[in-house]
Image (cartoon, rainbow over all chains, first blue to last red; front, side, top):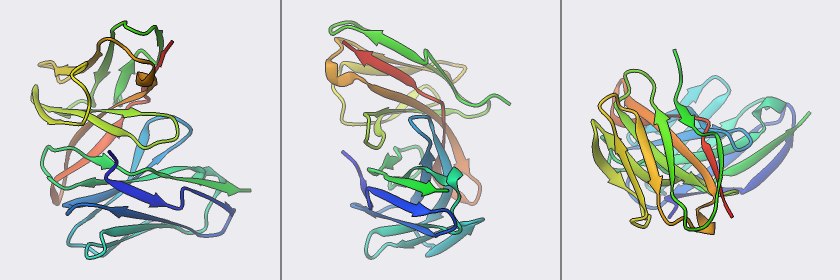
Length: 112
Length: 117
């Protein structure tokens, strides 16, 4: 079963616009991560936010975490056609060497 | 430095057959995780191994098994294949993130796409 659910399931925007994706999860977590997947290939790690952090930035990415609402958001600013991909949140609630569980994903299309 | 490598990249099997998928982690990574991704869905956790020991198991039947070797490479075996086993099987290796103890940041291979007819 999926630990998280992303919203929306699909998003289509024009190049240069911002894209916001949301993730809700079910259990307490140690860390939350976001990954990107291009067209059926392997996933690529984007950013990690720890449970005691509320916001984190990396380049054009901004991630927020609200543990009281069990939710996170990923903002991609000034989107580019190359950002077209599926984006997944992933939670690691046992920490250490336990499993990382992925959400259902948001499919982002950036139109040039 | 080589990334995570998986083999084979594509394979076709018939129902009832058995399959073995292979994964070589990034050099220095001691943990390997396996995921199943059905088209249009997120990856589903199957197994995690660390130092040749199973550290986590997902909600998959006993037809799925795995092992990790002394060089940290890993194999995933699926017996008595069903049509529903058709999926992309992803292997990921990991190590701890500096400053975030216990965080399991995954580096994925390109996957093995299994089709069961």
